[in-house]
Length: 621
Ligand code: ADP
Image 1 (cartoon, rainbow, N blue to C red):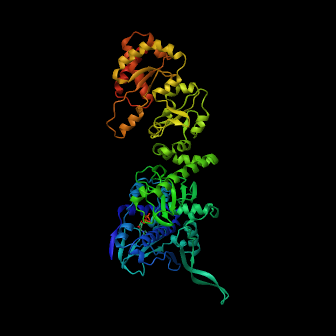
Image 2: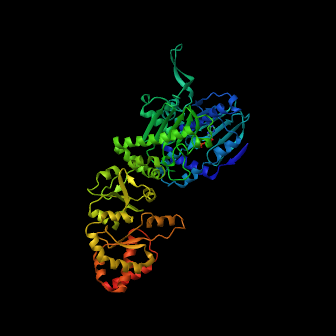
Image 3: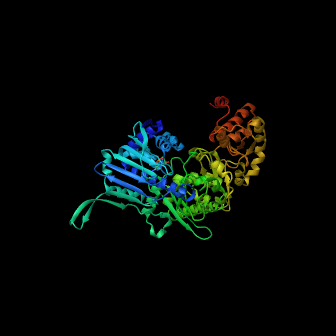
């Protein structure tokens, strides 16, 4: 017999599971049954495709055996099994890379953390929520020796050779005092129904149960074995047969989430290609949504045989929050990961699935706006990523995302913004930046406020990337107010008159500011501020440049802002009349620097700014 220690993270995770899941104890059974079901899925696949597995007996079933007196429960399966190495690596270490991330994400707040663990799926270790000793006897398919793994869930585990008649795994839980409430056949049956009813394999429960005896004419305890689940691949059944509870139960068993899903879409495609998809949208964004090594949530089946659940190819990255099942009638069973990427059938299913998900979301937006806003609160951001990466669905995505605007504090759609356009308004305008509050007070918006034109506020860090490539919403141009040309739309009859008067000043300012600016121009977009900065059509904005630099992008072509001057502002009018060149120089720089500051751009030389400011103040007081 050999004694081993757990990897540090395992001990950490175990402590956490035991302490934060006391209000969700019953999930231990769901987790263990789903491990058994996975093990059966794996062997089923191999027994259809590969020697020596093809010639092994395959009698898929999961058995729960309760011994009330001893306070033990065995969960057995006839699946793929584990050998000694597997036991050490699967049950003694944490192989999954996401787990470390997960542990790093914990807050110490038990309620929040237990929700996180819920989403994460605690797996095998949940056995220790109800047991103080767990024994695993397993024999790997195709091998002769079996192994016993035993642990008290504290420091480590023991490993020794054992006996097992056939391949598969038996997990024996020795319930602790509190766990004993699960040593109850009625309760176990209920939990199986609740979480594992639609596991594709039969689950049998063996226990001592009171049964009517005809000869004795009374109820006596008998050892009986009864199937406890429906064991149907739910997604293969017709929608009309299925109740909301059926869908919710399947969602929980495949996603590990214990909250109900927000939405689901069940589709059966027939014709040139036959497949079934059942997609779920979770109520809350998965904790790893913005991590590069996120866990994909869609399982691929071929004719009900489980193929894989870790492929990021099944749906585009921006839909990584979708959970569910794709079951194809046309794919070969032995599709490999490499083939998957270029498989025509799968590409077609993927394209159709994306269309389906998006069009269903569109119907929800129309029919159930309240629910849709819940969806938006969680998943607006990934949809915007789609705008960037999925050109084929640009129009739909533009209809699906929601934005805030200068006049709408709650979520609104581009369709609604379009509907509210003013007579003669040439485009839908938007402003991008990192801070919504700051954006709302930007001088670039002054004229729009004055003219009562709604401007879309885009403050997600990806917004500028995304919206710089979208030219239109339906037939209306989308224009960034940060860009020089948006100002052209705002010119009026007086613009030309003012230009003549302003030109000499513009020339002087250009001379003073030199290569600090690309140009100095007359502005048509300012009301209360003397100046603002804008960028040329093709160039990233100053904020975006600042962000790219912060992200480590060093080689950026030197772009300079265009300084716009408000001809109607008092400072500008006085400057026009002034002949004081030193004042002109300070004011020129102050006009530029203040415009940069309001847009949240850091100054190259703040102390110079302060010196100039003080010189001007000195003259004023
Ligand atoms: P997960 O199932 O999420 O990968 P678990 O902690 O539940 O994490 O299990 C870890 C690994 O142990 C599984 O990935 C699987 O390889 C193995 N395992 C667990 N239970 C069984 C079982 N009943 N039969 C075969 N392998 C199992």
